[in-house]
Length: 303
Image (tube, rainbow, N blue to C red; front, top):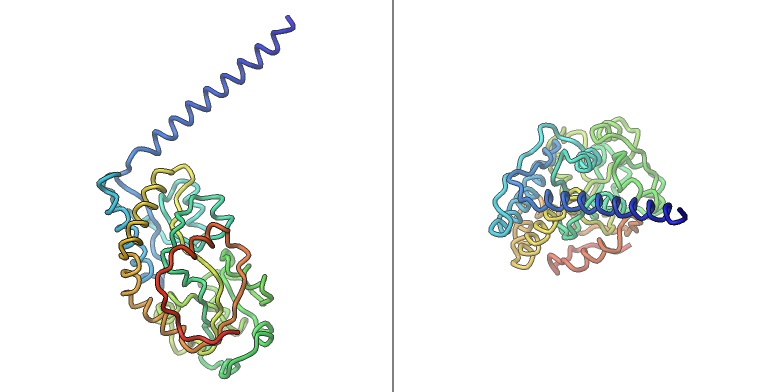
C-alpha cells in the first residue's frame, strides 16, 4: 500500500508527458505544413510608399525560398490598424506576418526575424511643426528642446524613449496627434524620416512644415514578426531575407525608393541629439551592427 501514491504519481507524470508530446507533435506538424496563403496588414493612410516597399521585400523573401517551402500568396486583411492592434492580431492568429519597430517586450511575445528591413532609419527623427512656428528658426540647445512638449502615439515605443531621455511627451492617437499639433496643445510631433514627407503630402501643407535643424537619433530596428508557434515560417523568412541581404538585393531595393532618398537628404546638415533606447534588446542591437546597409553617412553635426 505504501507504494501506491508513488505509482499513481508516476502514472500521472507519464500521462502528462505523453499528452505534452502529442500536443507538441501536432503543433510541429501544423507548423511544418507549407501554407499557400499568408495574411498581412492593410496600409495605414499616409504610409503607402513604405508599405509597398516592405511588401515587396516580403514577397522577394518568400519567392527566393519557394523552391524549398512552396509558393505562397499574400492576403491583406480588410481593415487597417495601428502597430499595437497588428501585434495583438498576430498573437490571436488573425495575422501571419506583420512588421514593427522592435522592443525587447515585443520580441518576448512574438517571433522576430532579426534582420533590419529599413536600415535602422526609424531611429532617425525630425520634427513636424506648425507652419507659423518661429521658435525653431535657429538651432536650440538640448535644454531648450526639453522644455517643449512633444506628441507621440499612445502605443509607440518612442514615447517611452523620449521620456527616458528627459523630454516631455503627450500621448494621443495617430490622427489626434496632428490635431493636437495644429491646435497648439503641443509644440512638435517627432516623425521618422522615412515617413514624414508622405505624411505631410497627405495633409494640408499650409498648416505644417518640417523643422530644419533638429535630428533626434537613437538605435532602432524594424523587423518582421510572426506568431511564436510558426517557427517554420520564421525560418523561411530568415533564410529569404538573408539571401536578399547577401546578394545586395535588400540594400539596392531600399536605396532606390524615393522616400529613402528623401530621407537621406532630410538628414543633411542637422544638429544631432543622441538618445538612448532602453527598450532595445541585446539581440536587436547585434542585428543593427551586423546588417550594415551602407558606409555612407549623412553630413550632420554632433551634439
